[in-house]
Image 1 (tube, helix red, strand yellow):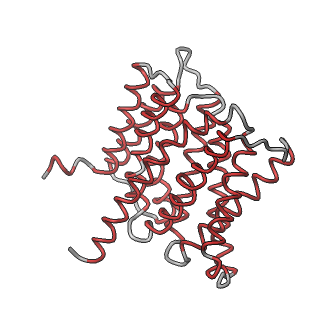
Image 2 (image 1 turned 90 degrees about the vertical axis):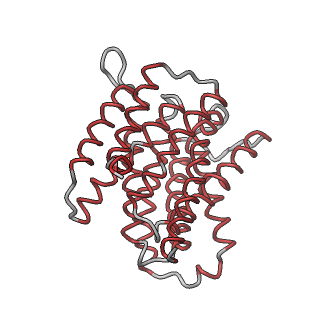
Image 3 (image 1 turned 135 degrees about the vertical axis):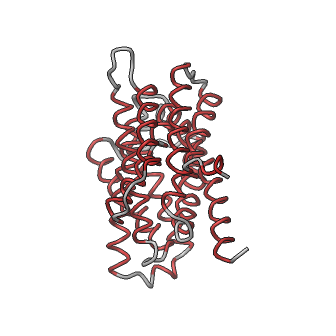
Length: 291
């Protein structure tokens, strides 16, 4: 096996583990928001994440350039909006529904890549997107064919994550992934610090439960995963990354049901299955059947 293929394989396997931990974050965020305000939680999450990475890789920060700051800031803005919509959206919907809605960004990535890279879409991508859209409709629309506020905001979160992934791929060959990750976290932290001061309060009460939850969110679902993603996307495309991250939705739904005791209706299960069929159609083009 060639070295490039080995690196791609390792990157893919590592991203699968990342998807598992990200899947658990929806239920944990939903749970702790009973005890802390949303912007306060994100301030802690990205504030501590920035500090940890900055301390570990302090020597790298000495080599930071204006170009690094510019590119990292652009990616960081997408990251901020993704988590802004995530933490607001989850207040009005279930963790399991949000994990499937957000996971649908895999459908958007090829379209955004087409706009940026000028690569035409094939029929599998168009069919996959249409099928996944039907699945999202079943998952989010109620009997009156209206979509609730939380699901609508979660769709914006999905779009933001797709833009974030494309931005990482676009700039990955020109920047140090560690420096880029630190800048992304810093930009996101600054925006949430400002929102906390404007709309909430800096008076944050941390009990044992909150400390455990915050530590888990910082280390296991922020610092390590995003650092891994920024490094891994140097070896595999954004489309492949998005396909691997579909596992996040599955883990998110399973963990929400087991951890929070959420119920998934037959309609939601059918919608989730259809979304996965659309994703598989778009990303694999059913090549394994042709073989």
